[in-house]
Amino acid sequence: MHVRRLWWGLIGLALLVIAGCAGGAPDYAPPRVDTSVSPAMPGARLPAGATPVSGQRVDAVALPASEPRLVWTTGDGSTLGLYGEQGPCLATDVRVTAQTTAQVTITLVEQQANGDPCRSNLRYQPLTVALAQPLGDRSILLLRAIEPG
Image (tube, rainbow, N blue to C red; front, side, top):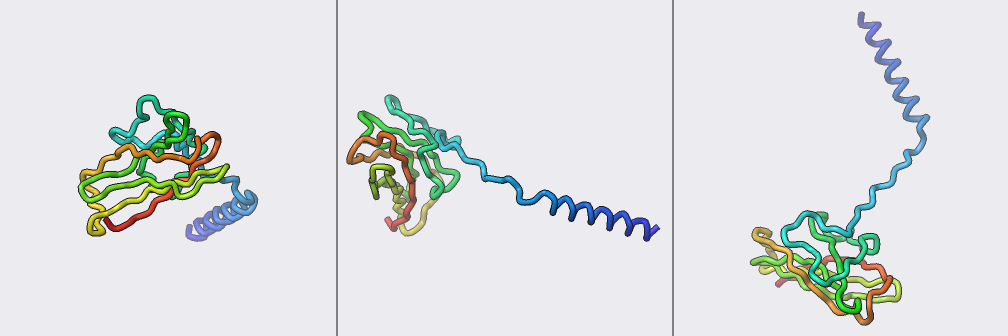
């Protein structure tokens, strides 16, 4: 009885090894997250009159996954908008940190009172920043920085 179990176990192990070797490298690419919509956040909506920026043009991998990635322009495209966290111990400012003909880099700067983000009672507020020229077809890189408040 034990010999039979051992025999079937060895056959099963051999089949697993063969299947693993025969498959080669898996054709896997991490799924691209559509950042054109924000995670379900109360109040995180496109403001009236704003034009959404396609999520394919927004690189937001530096932001925590829980933060909204909704980005928009207003007017002639020279004003960029997005959401930032605000709360009793946390304020967020938005800054243009670089602009080229291909990309605009935006940094969300969190200012924490006493170094404590005090994550209770947070809400997302729309923030805007002026660009040197309309966004046009340029991509957007979103970064995050933390400063003492």
